[in-house]
Length: 192
Image 1: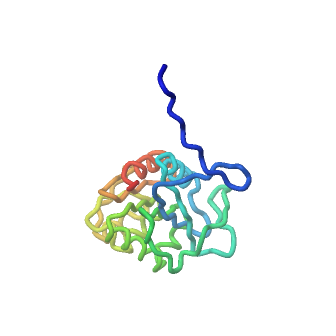
Image 2: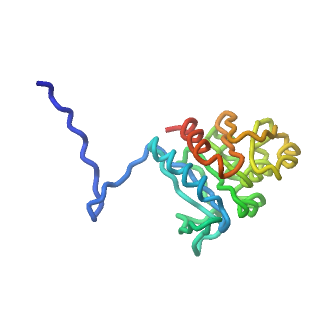
């Protein structure tokens, strides 16, 4: 008779619920309103499936951030001053509200910091504008909202209308319809 391997008992919180542990964590930058929650859910879920957690930041910290359809939640901390130290990458949530992030100096700084350090960078839909304005799209194949094609090209990027494009550690998605593919592509390139 073979010895059964004993599974390690999970650590429980004060309510007896198992505490999830992650091998790494990705920072998620969310606009304060009108973000694409469906693609964001897929991205977070796919990362959690490979034991990568997420932590959210937004320009709006004092209240709820609101998605395009119905999601709303409190972010973990404000975007201002956050650093990528201790994170394995950054994701910029798309949707109509993501254009507020495109000119945000902290969002652009995070994109440049992730590119410099060879960390995961993800963006979908309108959030690709952050990458273009931060100079991260230069020389890279990217996709995103079709309205950003000229901006991506002006920034030196190679725009394509594919659903999902991976260029090294840079993963971009056309829009929310690519949510599951976007999430899977993120999980495939994130450092665990």
